[in-house]
Image 1 (cartoon, one colour):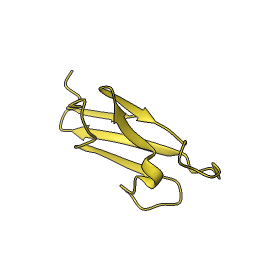
Image 2 (cartoon, rainbow, N blue to C red):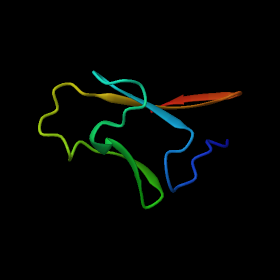
Image 3 (cartoon, one colour):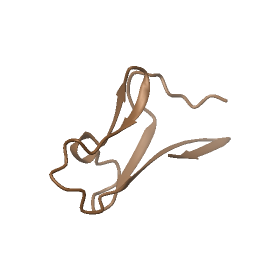
Image 4 (cartoon, helix red, strand yellow):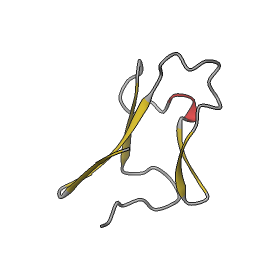
Length: 65
């Protein structure tokens, strides 16, 4: 299964964080560290239900994290 995750950045991945436009990676919620996708709220002053979704879609595969 090829997720097209290169281990370096989120190219090809799309994100949606509650209350923000599609693909606005508010306060760097989604990032890549040591070859892995990372989700962090460290840069938030408060959570305020700003949950997010990360998507990767190709012709034969759809993944939601």
